Image 1 (tube, helix red, strand yellow):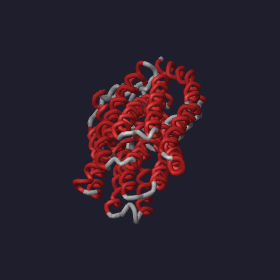
Image 2 (cartoon, rainbow, N blue to C red; image 1 turned 90 degrees about the vertical axis):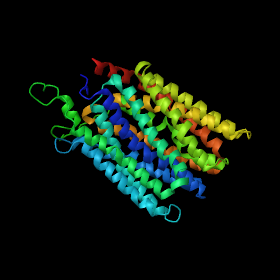
Image 3 (cartoon, helix red, strand yellow; image 1 turned 60 degrees about the horizontal axis):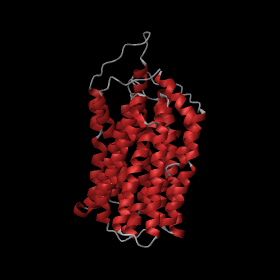
Length: 423
């Protein structure tokens, strides 16, 4: 049996979840690109910057530990929408101290605020993904994930590269205010959706319908039982290793370009334009291909494409004849593959999650992905310190290549589960 969310208009669904992912992407862009670039421009060592990024990823890595609370405690009075709205309020509130904290002299205080922000942001992500899984069919998840990733990437563009450009005009503190406003803006979409009456499917056998239960509008779940299948372990293993090549790249490419003599404002324009634009195109293309070509093929193909682009970047830099333009071209190519990989892999993980425990299962997959970002960012920072950027990038390429057999081991179980759900 397939749990359907047909009572939500497809266009409204895309706008709603794209806006929610926009509110996720805005702080990610600031904390993963704008802030590291700003800190490196101020003279902070790369290994300290990558340490901060690795620590900030930890709440996202272990969010599956409290995700069962989202599965268990939502009902008529406290819905998934309440989880989302409260999380967004706290996300903005935890960034307010950045208005008066100096990121260099008060580094520890800033790090503590950002860790707390990461905790509530991860909780928001858990709630959004659970809501999405509950209201979608397998046949539409690839395309919807493409739109969601496009929203997230627009948020990253606004407060990643956009923040670097905007700070030259309004200052760093005003940029933080803009970031908080963008985080809170999508709450209006959630509130409006909550007030809009939706036609309800007739009850099955006089009881609450499956979609009502999974939307969180019925009684709270008292017991969550999740027994990981063999496919789940393969998916977790792949999520923990496959994205190493680009998760580390996303953290270090700002400092890398600074160290190659490219100005902070130029990095901002590039990140806001060609870099994010390529990711958005890749996300929409990857989502479309995942629904038609198959999740596994799209994930494997896009990962190989990223590895080739990052290896080209590393070898170009190693040659000693790199120009700023050549480095940016390789980065834009990698960004296209990153978009394809993200939307297709997220659709694959959603297919493996059961609606009744969607927050827990999908959070486990995303936690493994974020764990990959944490260890790969830290490892890349240490390799850069001792061996330089090219060596670090090539080692991360190797780590991702090694993960491909894990993806192939997932094939049969994943495809059989998808077939059963479509029946």
